[in-house]
Length: 318
Ligand code: NDP
Image 1 (cartoon, rainbow, N blue to C red):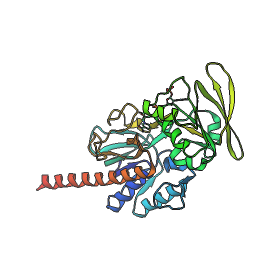
Image 2 (image 1 turned 135 degrees about the vertical axis):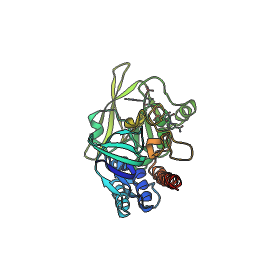
Image 3 (image 1 turned 60 degrees about the horizontal axis):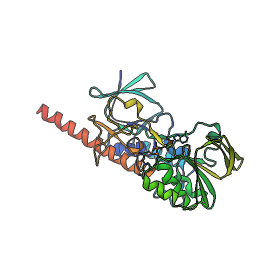
Image 4 (image 1 turned 45 degrees about the horizontal axis):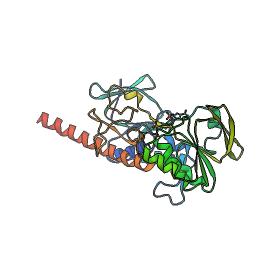
């Protein structure tokens, strides 16, 4: 028989755990499925220095363990499983875990996050957390006074390059075409920043390094075939993010990239009783603290929804 829950949370990043803390403290006995990467994107970061309340910073995986503990302390049931499909065509909502177990949920909070896109070359893995990063705001500080490279040519790449240019001696922007996709204003900021050098028609061949981490990048000019090495200590990817929302397609309204559309000022989706929080619904801010904030909103919205449903039932029976 299907497990029945009042509040089902899908995802275990700051958004999911914060939703769990609030829902658990409201006595809603939430059940949280962690997904394939328990703890989410922050588990790939060494030091988190911009989350309020940690004056000395905190290690990303440690922070996620603390959030998990806090959610469990108030009675959240945490399950290590992957939600593989959903059926939001009726009510209660049906969610299938690991392709076999069906859970029936009165409310669902989508907190599945987003994943940074990577180039797919082996050296990205070799130097993960040792110089390779997909978040300049998170990790840029560690490269102050050093040279770094940024890959990409959209608004993210432009924003990350100008951000890093304030901290680093030089930023090498690696652009695969002879033009950037970024908006004109962002491009002009890049072009007017003296310590950003743009390498046009250039692709990454390999990230170079040793035991200390990244030491450089070998790039190739895709027009001439010429290879060269650039000496850098940090390598930042800014080639876009992909929200982890494929399993909700067909039920939940999304934008063209897959970010869930929520009603302004709330976490409500187009489906009654389904809420979306964190990076899965945020293409702009994508920070741990904003994810946690919307996680709280999701739990409060779910609580309000359940209370209204209950009041409806009482009304029907009286
Ligand atoms: P985009 O999809 O807009 O841009 C991705 C960039 O990465 C493109 O220039 C693309 O190159 C390049 N790229 C993709 N794959 C590769 C690859 N394998 N090798 C090298 N380069 C690659 O993503 P963004 O994250 O920049 O932006 C996403 C959305 O968020 C956009 O709508 C953007 O406007 C918005 N945004 C807005 C900001 C703001 O207004 N402050 C800040 C950041 C984002 P190519 O051009 O050749 O396809």
